Length: 113
Image (cartoon, rainbow, N blue to C red):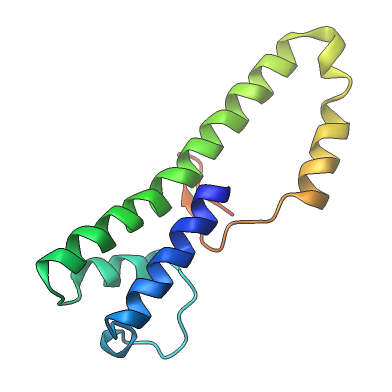
């Protein structure tokens, strides 16, 4: 999660520094999947393009990795009888204390937020 926040901050600073917000179709930028795709197509210098693409790759990778880790942990907990009983507590913790990502991740079953 920290890497995602860091990538968001760095991408925002890069966009401000290089005045890339003016090239976007929407005035309000919310880091949606559509806007991230739009960032991949805007015109900028080759050096800025490399840095921006790296940051966008980090933004796309982090939620997928988090989802994979969450699924692995859930599968492990479901198999272990002692841990399975505490899974409900874990879910309550995740719902209350984990900050949702600012954009959604596409999964096999649909959109996860």
